[in-house]
Amino acid sequence: MFINGEHVGAASGATTEVHNPATGAVVDTVPRADAEDTRRAIDAAAAAFRAWSKLPPTKRAHILEHAARTVRAGLEDVARLLTSEQGKPIRDSRIEAERCVENIEIYAGMVRGGVLAGKQVPLPAHNAMGLVVRRPIGVVGAIIPWNFPLTLMANKIAPAMAVGNTVVVKPASTTPLATLRIAELLADGGLLPGVLNVVTGPGAVVGEELIRNPLVRKIGFTGETGTGKEVARSAAGELKHVTLELGGSDAAIVCDDADLDLAARTVAIGRFFNAGQACLAVKRVYVFDSVADAFVEKIAARAKRLKLGSGTDESAQMGPLHTDKQRLEIEAQLADAVSRGGKVVAGGNRPAGEEFGAGYYFEPTVVVDVPDDARVWTEETFGPLLPIRRVSSLDEAIALANSSEYGLGSSIFTRDMARAQRAIDELDAGYTWVNAVQIAHDELPFGGTKHSGYGKEHGTEVLDYYTEQKSVVFAS
Ligand code: NAD
Figure 1 (spheres, rainbow, N blue to C red):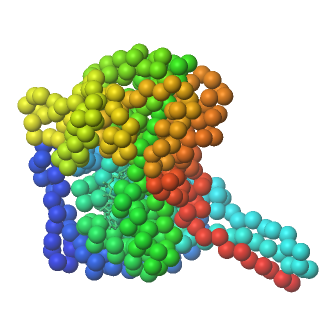
Figure 2: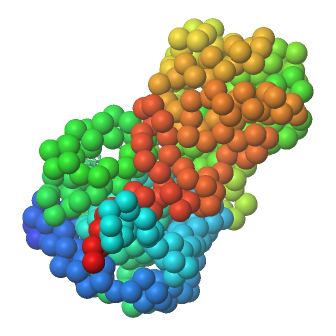
Figure 3: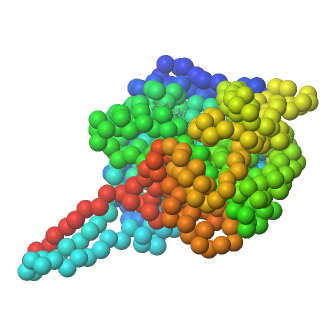
């Protein structure tokens, strides 16, 4: 683990193995922390908070920018670790590692540029002046899932540290290695001890301690909706600030006036990137009847063309699923769809071939004619499985899109501004892409509605979730 600028083991000496999803082989072992180990990290973060938060923002920015440069020098190593523990293709790991360090630079740049400035407010009282100032919150607990271990960590630690908070990160038990490497590189680059700590161990132990410990004032959580609800319940006891980035089942609507090639290309990226293991991912398609056959043909062709391979294969476009459990879940959701009458038009199997034997591979899969009560419509599908349904109107498409309990992302493909405007106004989601690839841009606030959670990451808006505002009155 990485606590107060040092590598440490669990006090008990316990460890957990980290496995490679492409081979099942053990990549490394990491400490298995208990509550006492977690308290050590929280205490280190609390001790570092005073000095870190008191630094002028420009000085903090300077330290973070300097540390980020050291991370940049080690990015290839970070990317290789990420592929070995997560399974994703190396070129995607490089992008993820790059985006992680970029985020640290972006928020350092923002505070250097004065984004933390408050405001002066005229008051009616005689000789009185009002101010609104921003303060960091304190120690932040960042709880991260395994699908994008680095970018989802960066979404939290970058703004949190830039505004003066200190952080304890808890990576998913299956993806701690690249995270630990980033923390080490930041420390090598001059980040002060205790500002960023990483504790490895089970969510129910380490996560729970972070959530219940009164020294932790804010929890940034990304993970499943069920876990997020538990987090919210536990955090209520200490009235903690909580940001919850949870599950999603993003709908894409393809209208009869859409550019079908663009729609097929975009939906294929939106569904199969990261082997479909993304919160923001096209998980349901509603396509207008008159163009449905043509669209299905195009997307099925794209699914069949995707090159599966081990993450270390430079030409692989899709790696294995992260665990066998993930694959079994996708297979069960597909079996449910097929048992209700669904027809598989691409994929549907574990790929044949010796090179796929030991990994958790599953073909990019497209299924049609699935009734509305099937699991693929009502649950989150966290893998390369895409159901497509025909609709007769935009009204029907929007109603079906909104019938999910989730509200993370959404998209529409149309050339008609009036239809796009209806989607923007009526789709229950934190994001709507119009004719665009489902990418979360650093510049725009990101976060869901309904059971996809609350709070925002990215943009300047995230700063509202890592600072508290204080009102001040000066009287003379
Ligand atoms: P998960 O909820 O199982 O785990 C997430 C993290 O929470 C892990 O670090 C885990 O150890 C920890 N945890 C588990 N139980 C805990 C507890 N009781 N208290 C505190 N922490 C606990 O999620 P996962 O399977 O790792 O990730 C996949 C899920 O994450 C999907 O549902 C996906 O949609 C969602 N996700 C959401 C976003 C978003 O930004 N909205 C992004 C990525 C993933």
